Amino acid sequence: MIDREKRNQLAALIRRYLDGKAAASDFEKCQLGNYISADQAIYHVSLELSYYSENAASTLSKQDWDYIQRLLLLLESNSTVSYQYPRYRSWTQSVAAVLLVVCLFIILLTGFNWHLFLYFIPVGLATIPLLFLGEPVPEVRPFDHILTPFHSIADLGIAYDSANFVKQRYTAPSKYRNNSFFLRFLGADVSILFVFLFVICMPPFALIFLCFLDSDCEIKVQPA
Image 1 (cartoon, rainbow, N blue to C red):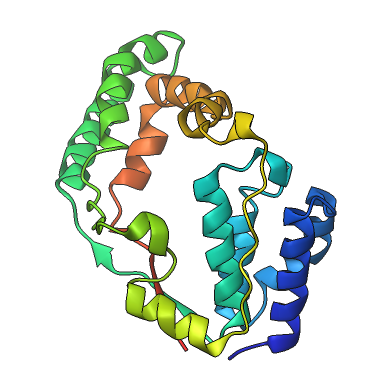
Image 2 (cartoon, rainbow, N blue to C red):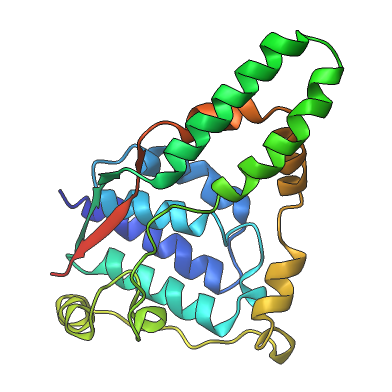
């Protein structure tokens, strides 16, 4: 289902943002309605923009700017978005189950006291790698960085043909043109350190989640 009115409203807001005339507060006003929209393309673009709208458009790298242009093309064409959630089983689930049993055994031996956290530390250190291992490695195609969210040059061409699309020229100051790694590093969320500390001290909570079947989200764009 294509909601052309909302697509046009969101596209206009994005162009205002790229022109430096819209701020994060402008996106927040329309996000709730976009997240519950029956048009999955609106939901997808709104979700992706949440990573960028808190910063000024002048700080965008060339790669980010081009990606937002393709999100605009997705909105202004008749392309649709669908989500698929294939479930998979990983070897990390078996390891997590064993570590969870170890945690329960430690609790039975020591009881609930402050020494428990000390005994949990080795299990917590073993749990942290499981958070990153065992997930399916996504297929990265040679031109993904210039095609995403579309899947091929042909799909991109179909979307261009169906939309009266005008790509905006990249106008960020030169000091932002080669900032990809450095600015992303400075903007990294340091709260991950607190997550690691929590996992080290209280590994059973993370292990319970790791024992369940996991699923991955696949985004399919049907060009039109």
